[in-house]
Length: 264
Ligand SMILES: [Cu+2]
Figure 1 (cartoon, protein in one colour):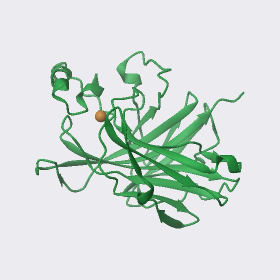
Figure 2 (cartoon, protein in one colour):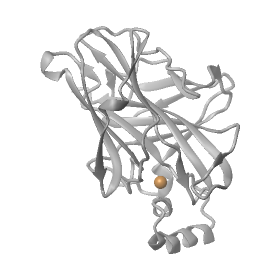
Figure 3 (cartoon, protein in one colour):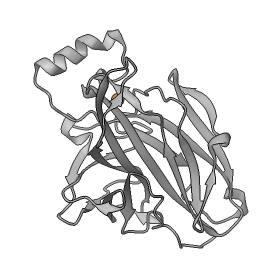
Figure 4 (tube, helix red, strand yellow):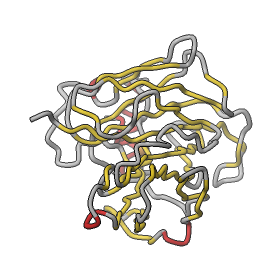
């Protein structure tokens, strides 16, 4: 049900009221998507990456939410940040603004792609949402640089190399805010159910919710092949103006996408 309160349409108002009336307090699990065609480039045939960028509810495979113009889109490679904002191509997904980008990889290295989307106003939560999102692509066997930190306000530091993962591997990371670990941070985890293969038996299965330990470290075992997202969600320190000019709270997310492959 919670997906119905996103999307701002009046037609969702009734569903929204129903959800509130029955006392549902589930997190509204929006996730910024940043997914490349592959997370491992081994051959020249794979070197032209396409990245898909949209704002959605991955496990429910929608509805898609409108994106404003991203504030940052770049790649961190060998310690250097390369601005890729100009490579963004606007497109529509289910009638909502989304983006794609192409990037040609020529050097062996690990490429940390990252995105700062425009703040998103979520009336259902009375919050502005900013999901700082990253994904790592390994090229030509470099396998170095995957733990390089971009320096986003909220960011997951991977303790497990975030590519070449088998289904059933355990992922571990540290939630960091301004570079410092966040004890007991909350992390939402979702599977990108892109082919609608998975039917959650109850709403509680849609978003997995875990907490970091006292050192800000979390772990999660991924039970299925495909893309998974870890979203560390923190309250912003300062308020921000919503589209009506009212000061409201801000949710800051540090997201990381990883892909699992079945062992066969
Ligand atoms: Cu939503």
